[in-house]
Image 1 (cartoon, rainbow, N blue to C red):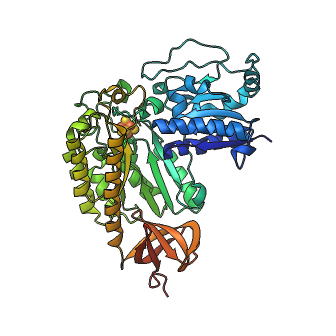
Image 2 (tube, rainbow, N blue to C red):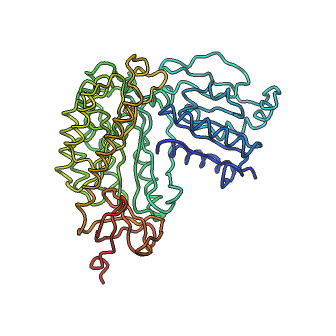
Image 3 (tube, rainbow, N blue to C red):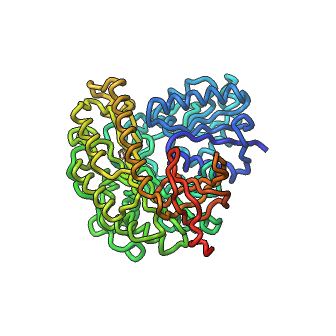
Amino acid sequence: MPGFFVENFGCRATQADGAALERQFEEQGLVRASAAAQASVVVLNTCTVTASADQDARSAIRRVRRQNPQAKIVVTGCYAQRAAEEIRALPGVDLVIGNSHKHQLAEIVAVANSGVVAHRAGVADAGWPAFIPLASLSASAGSGKAEAGSPIFVSDIFAHTELLAAPVFDASNERTRPNLKVQDGCDNRCSFCVIPYVRGQSRSLGRDRIIREVNTLVAAGYREIVISGINLGRWGRDLAGTPADVGTAALGCPGEQSLPGFALPASRKPRAGSERPRFADLIRALLAETKLEKLRISSVEPMDWSDELISLVASSRRIAKHAHVPMQSGSDAVLRRMHRRYRPWHYREKIEKIAAAMPDAAIGADVMVGFPGETDSEFEATRQLIEDLPFTYLHVFTYSARPGTPAAERKNQVPVQIARERNRMLRDLASEKKLAFMRRFIGKTVEAITLNVTASDAEGEFTETLTDNYLKLRLRGCHEANRWQMVNVENVLNGALVGALDLRQCGL
Ligand code: SF4
């Protein structure tokens, strides 16, 4: 029986797509190989968020070809959507399938199988399904000329509304914390970001499907589920209103129609008088209609942290006290050049509200340094805002020009050495803030879920855990995975809390 192997690169959304691809192959009766070297079909599910992500994909193609010359290599994902011709020209690639056709990937591979062999042998590609024209990096493309025999399956991503969804399980933590993607695509046009061009318009997994997926995971024994999306806070804006299910829906967000460059496609505009579900409605439904012990919400854009959402997260013990709020820059001028929808004072206000409602919550942000034209004083505005706000961790990125995006056309790119130094400064600041946050919990009791990893150090065996507020915690002793435990924190060592079970909570 032929085996397949899916190797994922990049973000959680790409991993979720990868899990859905595995489902497609399994439904066709194929078995999952344990490694690319053992598979007859290897799918490389790529990312293109930075130039180095593209490079990683190209290296993987070479590696798989070297390790397993007989395998058919299928390249899919965001890089395939953005630069299909570039990938097609690489030696050893059998098929390029963009995000536009990912929902049919296993089917295309099955139909094309004999054609793949023919193509690589330089023989005519008989047996290929109808060609699907290439889309260029633009919303209006997609009417290219048919080219029989092309191994490329890419079309206008903005014409697609499918959403691949399957829970993702960490390789090292298969028994805990699955991630479920409930939203894909993005209607924003941040000037540095290629994602809308490779993932298309914002679209949501239906509420009932989400409830079913979560209930299936709960029945399988999972106690924490992470919900994620490309622009998660926009969940529901594309769904038809069902007021009985979702309550009163607010349409749009402050400034949504007023900033230049952000016109919503006609099909995406809220209809007058209609009520569309909001993200907070989904959270309430998950609490009401599942027995999930802990829901963790991944990244939500600042303007989508409504008062309602903040109070919902703050008031339920079943929602992890964790807010990830992309910031990108603390400079008003840079945010404008980035075409971000909020100003630094909006951002500050949101974080202060979140911290006031949940003083012990993890609060994290994505920050970008080296955006074109970023001056010393603009960078200082970012550094100062970070210093002022109660962040507990940061993801710091250095700007990487992406072909086809407005920012890549700007002349005043920041020299790489300066960008690297700014990155280092923010990482150092983030480390200090994280350490101070961790120390606050010494002598206190925290709630943590045991992960599937045990190890030992000079003081004996321990089990890795993750606290409700997103801190690594080494729990003394060997404990069963996937259990919420109350833990007394004794110390902070090597970037993690260290603690022992709170025996009072165990009834001992
Ligand atoms: S919100 Fe901006 S950065 Fe995030 S995916 Fe959409 S366009 Fe990209």
